[in-house]
Length: 401
Image (cartoon, rainbow, N blue to C red):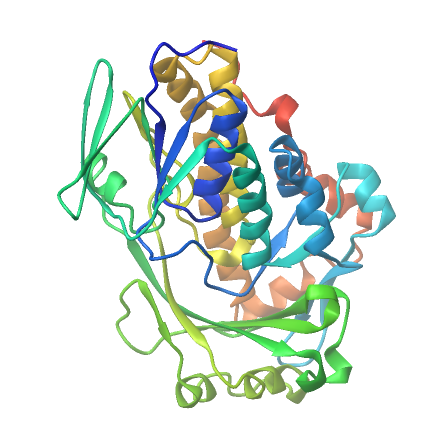
């Protein structure tokens, strides 16, 4: 590990899952870290998230695998049903054979519990300073480091800056300046207590019901005491990227023609959060000298691959490994990190778009979708997932130039 002649920290913009994972990776590589978070306190909004084996590989590499494991719910399978006629499109066992194949489980977890697992690791290090209610507005850099200006007119000096400031990244805006691609798809998310959740849907599975221009997801959380409910539809309105309170009337106005078993999901929540979704076109450069992007700031994606947070944690591990491989030479490491991540994360963005099309198929396309995986064995499903779930700390770096 390189000894630093400077007392300057590395600055991380954003204290979400990606930012905390990055902070943890940096500390494990010998850096001090200063996290700038625009919210008044650290935390996560949202509901559940899915964790593939790749996410657990990343948690393990950051030293918080056990914390995440004890908060997760381990599903028995992933299952897809047609929301019109209940036809089972595909079912993938995620039990012992799956774990043996990929070296880690498939699980679901509340976003706040994943965030807490990382936060515990960060706090235990004693090397990370948090500054809340602070938003980056401008970045300058020179040969010795970066100067970050915040909305209060204060400056923060650091060795480097990791822009983990989310889908509306200010750091990306300054260095890339591209536009978001608003999908017109709206996601409603809620958490429902087990007592209020239909018994005929209380499956220990990551479950999706796919319908014309819509889909519905449910799975257990927090030891099965709660269920995550997510419904997605194509909006009739012109959408702008963002999160608002959901409306029971709006969500009820979609999802016509679905089977009663699936449609009952939208009657359950007392309140909803509403996401108007977007992504961006994949880019080949997100490292700029002593500044780099991470997570949604680097490669925002739609939710159809259930990999957004997993990719951010992978990014953090890869960043740490790139620093290790380059003796903590920041600019060389940032270049290797970017080269190691661009194609994989772009594949997630593009695959997610295609998966959204498959989920929301109608007419003859729906019939094709329902026939795609007919008779496929678990092993063939696992082979198809190898590119995604086979990622780990040993294979995360690109070959040197």
